[in-house]
Image (cartoon, rainbow over all chains, first blue to last red; front, side):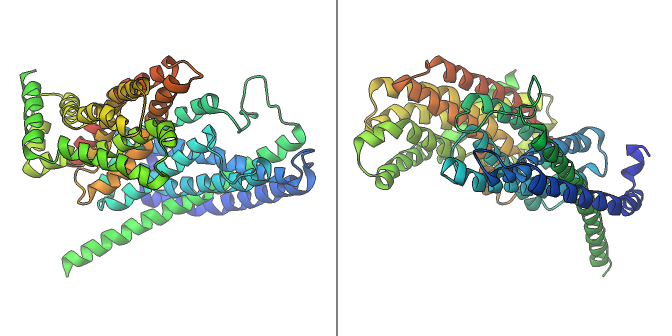
Length: 242
Length: 222
């Protein structure tokens, strides 16, 4: 089915109704396997002990935090360039999810940082840029809420999202520039991962679980948004007719 | 070209004659700088150490003050519609309006900064570095702020949302502005390294700002 066929909301809702249970089931299975491997199979770190297990939540959250903005950026192009009717629904549904994953990343990071660094928060480059990402998500959500007309809000948010996408390279750049306390990137780097496979495999399974969770929640949120807009339109018609 | 020059003159004249522009901004800057010793104590050594940061925070907040009027005033009296319909590219009109805004609100902050540096006991070198980084950095604040002003142009309570949208985007400029000033005072990196990045960020905002603001205006006014 081509992307253009999904421009019809009813067809999209039918597809969601069929796909959503499968996605939710796949996410549940991936989480079961991933958490089992992460908590029971993967070895403790010889220095960090059991606290290294936080990584299996922390790192996928961080990836998803950035991935969500990427998805919103593509949706923003969909709104401004291709004028796809569902692009702004996708963007609106992704924003709170991205904010939630970013918050989860910050929360688990600070819980991990307390025993490791001795502080819940340190002003290191990577932490700071994730905090900025969180603030940007909040700004996007705020802009969605203050503009009443959905299609006008969509175009304003799309522009803000594209401007914010310029922020993402600065996040990566900041890792090299300000890197002080935080360890440098160790999975996605030239020369292959420096993590032992016994930890890397559960981590990737958890990342897959997070992606499946995101897709499930995102499709459900898109469905809810479409239904919410239908209710809004019906209410407006009713008010006009009365 | 004539239309753009006329727009520049008009905006600057409006800003100077209506009041609430440069003098209030500089007053706000002075008040923010005055508040810091009350909060952190009158220790001159400490103030000298965090002086560049105080000046930058003050200038950042002061430059945000009048931003919500950048397009909103023109939207209310209808001249924004005229600008939108004219043959002048909207991006250039945004550049000119932001430039006029910077000349009337940003530049006075840069000029006031060395005077306020006296209050913080900064030595001449630090004062010069702070003024130079502010001279380079405040245009970036205005041009990034123009995006927020364009997004918030039709909103009734634009000022608050403007600050929430714009301030996160200005963080890199704040970081490198203060870093460049501090390296001029204490090192260890040469002043040129962060200062060049600050210049780069400013040039980037000069490009991105007008295009994004013009797009936001076009979509917002439809």
